[in-house]
Length: 316
Image 1 (tube, rainbow, N blue to C red):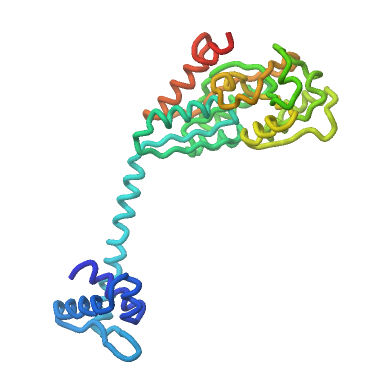
Image 2: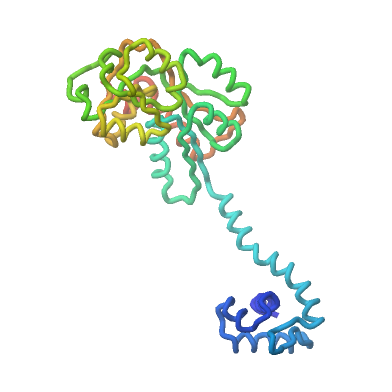
């Protein structure tokens, strides 16, 4: 008995028709009929009764199908089991990121660096709370996020309670990001103030909108109906590029110097904004990084290290 004949017996038993079974198995009806007759001769007993209404199982055939069906089901999942094993043997890396461009740059570097290796990657853009949950629940290996000075003490306690370790990368101020449709783009300015951006719409990430960032903005008269909330970096850059809107980046301007990916954007330091922040990465306290994660950690540390890396070179 061959595995093909097992499949043929089960298909005929299911359809009750030699012609339907042949069609489903993509073989000719005469070939299927001959194969079943050969099997019946091999086993020494008829499996099917052939009649005008189709094919029905004999008593022997019923017993045979009861034995063959579970065996065939087990055999049929073998390719899936080995595929799953091959999948689990692949290297993997997952990152959750709080709209931080240079973290995405490093993720791209990682993919290019290991491009000849079969691997599984995961990259998610999320707010700080979601990033913490991703890392704590093992959904992501690494989380990159910013922390406001006003909430740092609370965040450190939260990290500890979730079994997460925090690693500071750099301290940073605030910067505005504008596109060529905004007059500030075309001026030679080394900094701006909140008053300078008063005439323009604001584009804010949802997380920033719900944070102390907006609390501070309430002290200046904003243009009516001008706060545009987004939940992803692509939406922010598209809006800033195509309108005169301003994004107050709760991120470093360094990412935009690190890459020419956004040549239509300009960053200008925001001087009179009295909130400080830092950027860092988190992992589980017992996390043992693989080769991919180590590459990411080393690279993101290198490019944000004070006095070194492409970022600081661009800023001098």
